[in-house]
Amino acid sequence: MAQSASAIRVKPTAISVSAESVLDLLGEVRLNQTGGAGNWLALGQSATVNKCKIVRSVLDLSQAAAVLVSVPRGAASALGLQQAAAYTIVSRGALQRYNPFVGAGADESPTPPPPLLEAPEHVALPFQLFYPAEGVVTDSVVLRAPNFGNKDRLAFNRILRETRGGTLIVFADPIWPKIQTLVLTFSGLRNAQTRQLLAFLDAHLGEEIALLDWEGRTWKGIITTPADPVVQDGKDSYTASMEFEGELVPA
Image 1: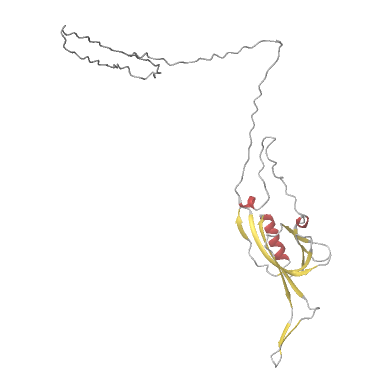
Image 2 (image 1 turned 180 degrees about the vertical axis):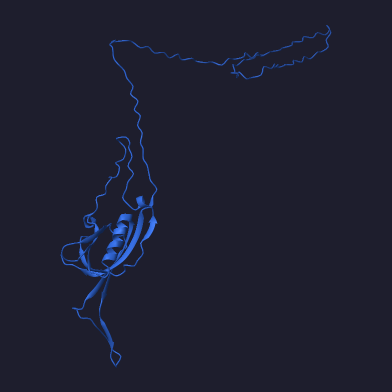
């Protein structure tokens, strides 16, 4: 008979129990002359479980500072505070003019728009009406440039005739006059400009006047719609319209 034992790793969460292994040995008895005899052998074994502990490894970290040179030095911490300010004015008159609202800010802020707009060369001159058309000017009025969408109408004189045979004949002599009409609308006029315009139209009704447009060209002619109303569409803001019929003066 023999037995062996082996080592087994038991988890810390294992449950302690008991176990046994019983080996039964049977003997045979035979009758003899000398009598009977019996021999009983009982074998037993036990296993003991030792409770394991969790193993930990602690790593200690440490540092040390050594002074090499000790000299006096000053230290400072500067905290910079900046602010920016801007403002807007909701007004119809402000919306119809170049009037940027420029505030103040840090040096690295975006570049603000210029306070004054540089007009292109062809609109640098103001719009002007003056009388008389030729000679020394005795009366004039200066207005802002008209709104976008102005019209330039050109009308020609021609003759349409139909012969007895039904043929349509159209004839126009180059020496016949050509009618050119400027249809203009002005917005954002001030009260003073509006009064000057109405006074100019009333003083020179039906008379030939001169017109200096926004491109620097001079025209001679008359205003054919002096009765068009002037509408006030805001505080100190007026809108006026006119039709000027004339011809361009050669430069």
